[in-house]
Length: 333
Ligand SMILES: [Zn+2]
Ligand SMILES: [Zn+2]
Ligand SMILES: [Zn+2]
Ligand SMILES: [Zn+2]
Image (cartoon, rainbow, N blue to C red; front, side, top):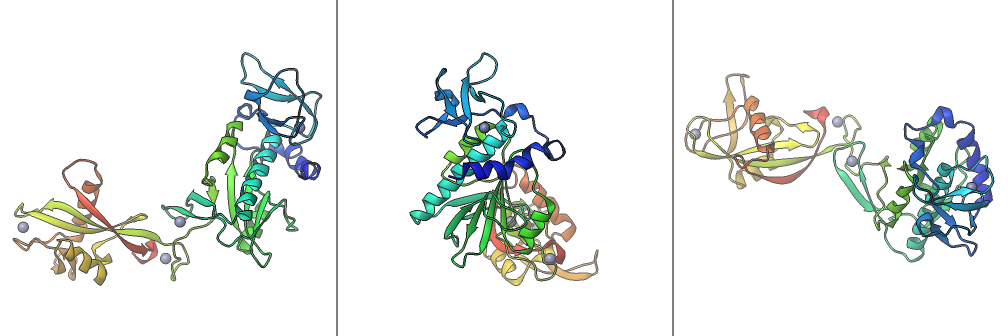
């Protein structure tokens, strides 16, 4: 392990620019909670013993156990270590353990599932982090930056980086570099030393991933969102007969009746609705509308959203079925 080089690489960021780049978190949440024993094993403060000496994973200096009445057990440097704080130590150990976990999966050709809430669409995504990666590097030098962890493909090209963020933001120039070079940025944002426990999860669940798995819109270039066909068990507004009302609902907002494609309409009618073309006097044109099978009254586009809203309520009144029908973009509504 390259402990010394890591300390040097990281010390500037933490000690000099910390007041400017600090995250809005309570720093007291972070204590040094892991250390190496003299034998080189990682140990948690809760399992450590007073009077024994331990080694700081970050700066290699001696640590002692503090077990007081107010703070939970933690390690402290025996003598002051200017460039080593609990934050830098947490950063170091988290990065190292995550790297070792990825390395273990690569060596054994095991998939490593990653799950994230998407910044670009409302859907969470899951994928295999190691689909294309064949190699992992700590502090890989990219010239403009040294990401904590880099994943490389068979052509030795960096395809994704993992940044463990504790007390600093990532520089804008670095973010630009990742974007320009199509490198997926994965971020863990740590706010307390207990975050180390997140690595026990067999799944990788970072806080931010700059990637959406949905297709992109050909018109505007943004990521599309999922859309669903709802079949709502309702009643005709005119004759009160039970009526299945089809509506298209999108993860990125309501889609109007005119959003019914031929295949959506076919599916809706297979599921018991009656969506046919109707002439609306209100808007002066023909469009597809839900029609009562008994009295042939139809639901105007304007009122259809009321059915969707009512079906979102958890009550028993409007039960509904949901079918995935692909993707849409808000620009084409
Ligand atoms: Zn240290
Ligand atoms: Zn997405
Ligand atoms: Zn679009
Ligand atoms: Zn009716």
